[in-house]
Amino acid sequence: MVVDGASSHVSKELAVPENVRLLRLPPYAPELNPQEHIWDELREKEFPNRVFADLAGVTRQLESGLPKLAANTESVRSITAWPWIVSLNMNAH
Image (cartoon, rainbow, N blue to C red; front, side, top):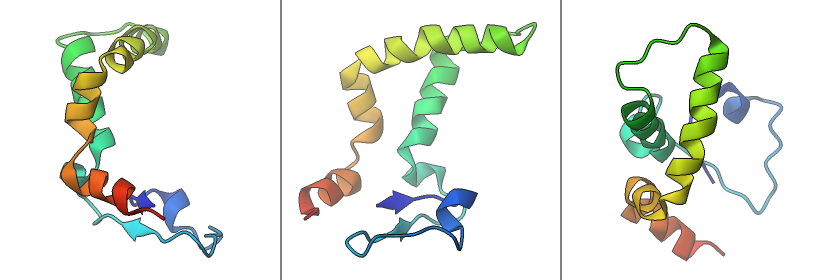
């Protein structure tokens, strides 16, 4: 499993099953972390030059934009299906 530096991923209390191996990303590596690119895509498409009066407005925009992005499977695939990630899935036992 590929993990980033989130506190829950480095906690001493994290119990990793014997059949799971953690592959840690470098401390700051957005180019290796496809979820960062998903957020970039959302910011570019759903939040360009927008100012929200409150958090509820941001939430509504996310609730509108996330399903649109999820429905565009080709876009999501092009953002996230990098060769190194696909090879991990193909080599999983």
